[in-house]
Length: 241
Image (tube, rainbow, N blue to C red; front, side, top):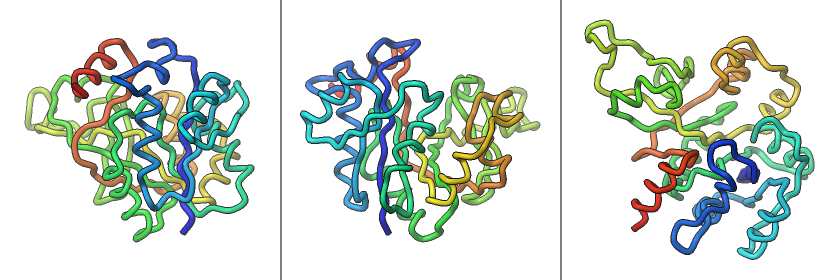
């Protein structure tokens, strides 16, 4: 099975300027992500997909394979679709966001094990979150599933436990923004227009589900968080000593 990892990486960020090039110790955030992905033996290649000359130069200095893309992509998935169109052959593409600085080879191996055993259209990840504040936070995306099959993603506090005043049962499945796409699902997604649910929630994975694509989810240990603010960056620096 040929599995290619693509890391979409744009320089622009509305809340944290040049965040992928911000440093944590002697590494950039993007460099941390690339290093973890490059340690996964199942990846045939790890590609940085970017429209930034600065990112290209810094990542090539680390030995990374960089693919330059258009600058007008509305999402990382669109950037991945452009890169995928130039690939000779692959079975799955794994999308790891460039700001997932806490991603580990173990996280990715857990996802890939399920991928190879079950061959879903799309596979993603979640972790157990026991924070009531996060449950109520619309920036923390929740997923509801039966077994491994995802039923819905939402910014709302779901599933709601009617037996408690807060609706919180003590934990929820917190979505981690890692995706593995089959070659067929990439081709279908490339043809899809934005959907009603996607526009309401501002979650592009709902477009794929509305189109009938099945998404599996696997649990990964610990919690991942994207680096979107100065507070996130400081938290990451503290975690890394």
